[in-house]
Image (cartoon, rainbow, N blue to C red; front, side, top):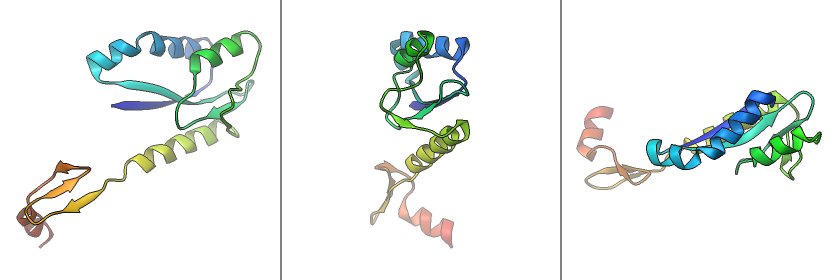
Length: 124
């Protein structure tokens, strides 16, 4: 399972959290089947970024700590509300499922849902 994260604020705790995610990436994947990606960061002082494919949060933490700003060639975001809005939109886009009805069964994203005769009973 993938968890896309947006960090509103990028102070000491958020920067350490970004590094911790990277340090524990293998463990999270193996033990919890979890892939965490930071896709958005918003700060008052350093600007805001959003990238659907994920940001290199560790490199951005290093840049901020050395006096730089949030710049990595990603799409800039207007503010924290814009980052949150984009995250919500990207999650909503992935929630669509493809449904295919066959003579004897129904598939959603290629997983068996219910037999067709059950659908008839449900929708009658």
